[in-house]
Amino acid sequence: MITIISATNRPDSRTEYVSKNLFEMIGKYTDEEVNLIKLSEVDPGFIHPKMYEAEFQHPDLTKLQDEQIVPADKWILVSPEYNGSYSGIGKVFVDALSIRKYAETFKGKKLALVGVATGRAGNLRGLDHLTTSFNYLGMNVYPNRLPLAQIADHMIEDGFDEATTKTLNDFLEGFVEF
Image (cartoon, rainbow, N blue to C red; front, side):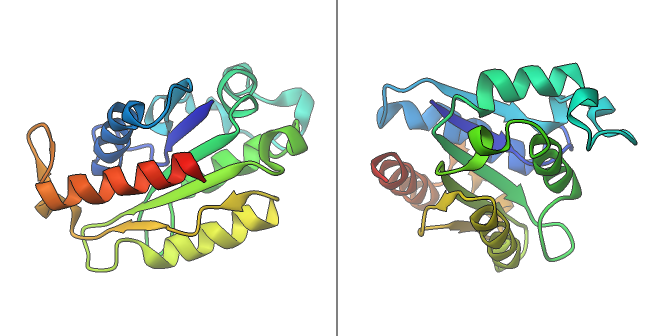
């Protein structure tokens, strides 16, 4: 199973647009089940004072972790650039997952990282920060991280311009083989 995570709580964002398109495109390269988690649709109630105690994990997060995170052997994390790094909601989501079934959630799993930014670097710093964090958690990060710079210039009504579509297809094909 492959799980794609749109790591922003902004609905209808460019990050969600990229995530949705990756979800639709990946079927060309795998027969595996693929899930899409949009953090904009996750109940924000999982953030509370006792969230770092396993017995108080929000039931919606427990269900998500048990059904779409733990069974996935590969993740694709699509992260917007926020203040030169990655989103706070992405960080707190990973933190919340780490308090229960830690090894089953992270250890030895493969992770691809996609950065989304309106600027020129495509969230390269955020991808570096995420790589360090997920390596610490025991995940194997796909070495071909994908920074999508000036993303708004490459989005069209039903996907992306030709060059970006090729880049995304090459990225997905390589990650599925990883």
